[in-house]
Image (cartoon, rainbow, N blue to C red; front, side, top):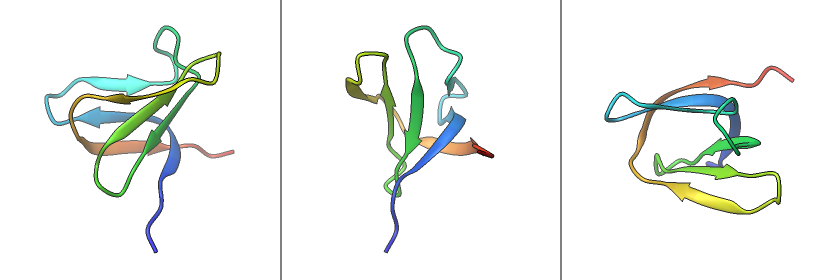
Length: 60
């Protein structure tokens, strides 16, 4: 079974990047369907428009 993984950041189809360093972003999660979700400091999760094409894994 495939599952989502928490990553440091990812590159989107349009070349933009989503990372934990973005304002208001605490964590980034990539999903097997190539969608991306981010969580803020209030623990609210939202989905980012577009699909990821690559990511940088977390090492901790």
